[in-house]
Length: 242
Ligand SMILES: Nc1ncnc2c1ncn2[C@@H]1O[C@H](C[S@+](CC[C@H]([NH3+])C(=O)[O-])CC(=O)[O-])[C@@H](O)[C@H]1O
Ligand SMILES: O=C(O)C(=O)Cc1ccccc1
Image 1 (tube, helix red, strand yellow):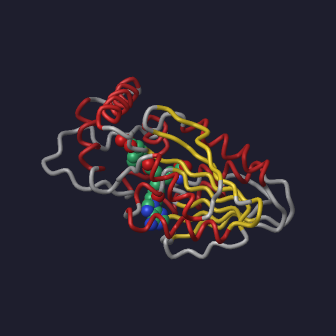
Image 2 (cartoon, helix red, strand yellow):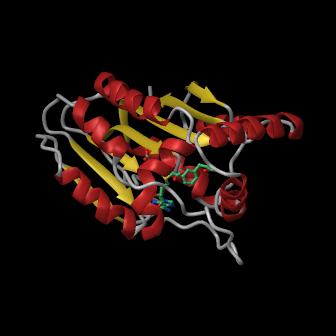
């Protein structure tokens, strides 16, 4: 696995964070060292998919990057006539995702599609995964995505959404961010790497509060949802369509 050194050297000008070749090349190491509980979340996506699978259905991975969640879903699907649809608008990610998926044999087909999830048709879905992707959409596009997911889910279908979130008060938010930075230090990131990446993400990743997430899920039609994982300012939620 290639080590993430993207922000290791001082940069004269810090550009907005992009999912380009340099990031895609080191992504497994970057995500593993940057998202608390990432492995647990990927494994649990598989477990939840095993429970909520339905025959003759689609399984979506929106903002799939290298396809970790798609692989986890695929490993757990035993129902007939199912297809995983993995979508990302970064060509660097989708090219590597396609190669990655071909490296493992499976009877469940996966389509890895280069495209914008805001333009995607979602239909006949048993499970939809949005694993740390919605935070990168413009805030004004987030409700429409959740509405579309709700409409595209079959009855009994499941949405899994993971996000970095903002705490309700500035004091609490600072504390969670502080603890998160300790986690990054413990994983070998330097002060420079932490601060340069923070600057690069400032305009492109805008976390919401859990209250905002709740209100959006309700508005989309999900009557119940639950946070099933939280560590510092990262969480994963599920929501069921009745
Ligand atoms: N509008 C969009 N349309 C499609 N893709 C998008 C869009 N905006 C951003 N992306 C894509 O969303 C992904 C977010 S990473 C997901 C990790 C993965 N889910 C994982 O489980 O490993 C999260 C992170 O790096 O923190 C990137 O690959 C973007 O190109
Ligand atoms: O690294 C960070 O600060 C994060 O918030 C997580 C992350 C992980 C991978 C790409 C972008 C953001």
